[in-house]
Length: 146
Image (cartoon, one colour):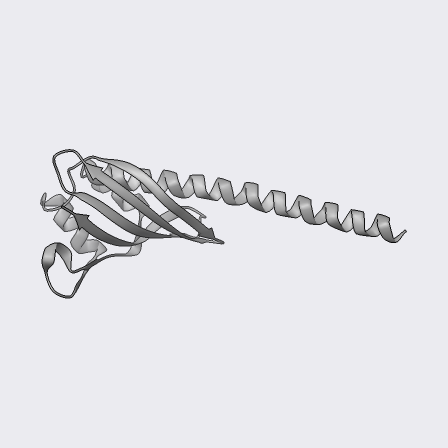
């Protein structure tokens, strides 16, 4: 009897672990799609698409950006204004996902973006799910690699 109980418990545990792994892989794919949509919208300066993937509290945190001292914070509104004015965005990159980590309704993505004729970037993106369970980028920590 003891063997049967242990076997049943192990089976239930394995089923739960298997489901969690499948669920997490699905979440990682959703996060990846959101990041790709963000990159595509920035490449085309598509403000409408950016509005859907950027969280209302989105911030760019640029540390020592292009050799400047200190950290620069850029709000969502300022970022979209810079995008509209052609000061940022407009370049396509080849993306290499280095890491995607999902914990419940929060995710972190480490990604390398290789430019064709432009500077390459290494970014850490942080995403959250909104009340409709849609992933949105809430924070962008870029490092320009010349």
